[in-house]
Length: 125
Image (cartoon, rainbow, N blue to C red):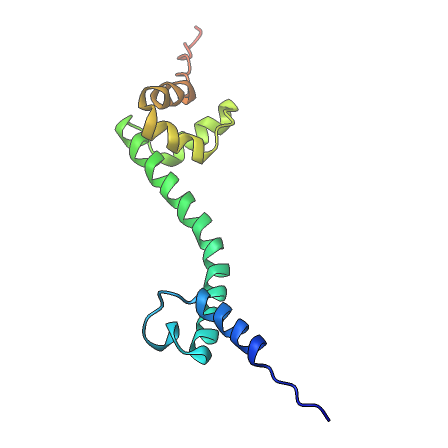
């Protein structure tokens, strides 16, 4: 039976693994077994945190809009409700960008969304 030597393949896979963990601390960046474990966990965290990143972004947009709406004398929830009633289709990302880059435009959008005062009913005699 011929002998199969795996030196080339083993070296190639080891190099690939260690290339992925370059910069990791302690044995995780130099030892093959610990590096394999580190790669596995990194993939798990990357998957979970791709979802979290979207949540974090939306929360930041909400905070920016809330802060700007308070400066205009209304609350975040009232502003968003008024925008919805008026049929304004700007999403939170766009509104937050307006707050940061064009506050005048955001102010005009907020003014447009404010409900018009209802006329006072007079009692007929």
